[in-house]
Amino acid sequence: MKKTSRPLTVVALLLGLFLAAMEMTVVSTAMPTVVAELGGLPLYAWAFAAYLLATTVSVPIWGKLADLRGRKPVLLAGIGLFLVGSLACGAAGSMATLIAWRAVQGLGAGAMQPVTFTIVGDLFDIHERGRMQGLFGSVWGIAGLVGPLVGGAIVHTVGWRWIFFVNLPFGLASAAVLAIAYHERPERHDHRLDVGGALLLAVAVVAVLLGARSRGAGLVALPVAAAATAAFLAVERRAREPLVPLDLFGTRIIATASLSGALMGAAMIATVTYVPLWAQSVLGLPPTSAGAAIAPMAVGWPIASAISGRLVPRVGYKRLLVTGFATSAAAALVIAVALRPGIPLVAVQAIVLVYGAGLGIANPPLLIAVQTSVPWNRRGVATASTLFFRTIGANWY
Image 1 (cartoon, helix red, strand yellow):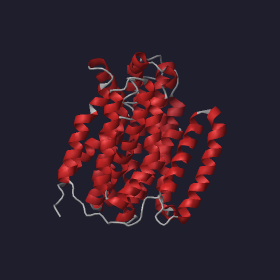
Image 2: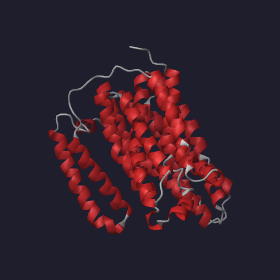
Image 3: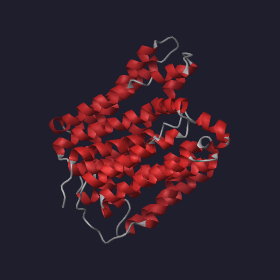
Image 4: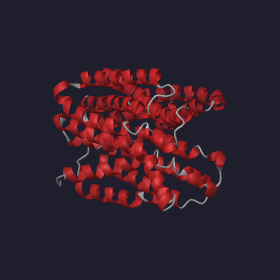
């Protein structure tokens, strides 16, 4: 078997991950222009929700497929689906069409995040993994935060359709480099994907997220979510090759990581959503300055994440997790107390910087602990499960 070029593979993975992460937020500044051209204002929120729902639902499915069929074909399939959705979104002639293809984009992105982190876990040992997971975690954080700025720049220069078309050359480059540089010898399994479990999980996730986002829909959606979840658990207990092996969550590391990931997702989206809103409504700042209030998070997160990743082999997971979450909790408390009329913007930025640094410290050890606790044939689904709960936390909030 040909030898993998780790440097080229890392570059390709970083590029693909950046595209998937940025696409979650890059459309935010473009949507007013999109609605002005395509109409469909009542469907405005679904341009975001379709992508996030499709990504959330598909993450554990792609993770399981990566364990069954190998990382490379699954990741290339995800990139291909993402690019097809991007091309179609850019060519959309109506809001309904745009939303449908945003869902296709999200399905592809659902593979790009978990399988990328799984490949990193495969390629690097515990001493190298911390540094690399810190790097990849920082790219994810940066991409999610700078997306609105990039989207605004593209809309004002070449038009809103290019926020989708720009994915094509970079996505194709990522796929081409992966096809040439990354080689694996996957452990083949005769078992098939647990289709019944996948469908029930999809129903449960969509229902719970719809119920959380709408009080009216919650009266119907949340009971449906409860019933689908109960059916999913029953199916998984009997499945020969379950989509999500329930015994994984019997281990302390996986259970703790899942809960922590959900809290981390909620914590990040809460700050990104409400601090700019507060800056505009209370301090009376324009949108650009309000966005600058959370910009330091894009600095604190990646720097702290890179440092934390390097410290994992020497310090251990637990100390870094406790330190990171304690730092973010303290900063969150300061935010709640200190954000009052008249507070200088620079003070808000300093608090947000510390807040983001705390999340950055906790991010790498959380994922590394999970990947180290399972064998190769479970690393994909374990990684995907952790990221799945993080996405659930962000969507639920």
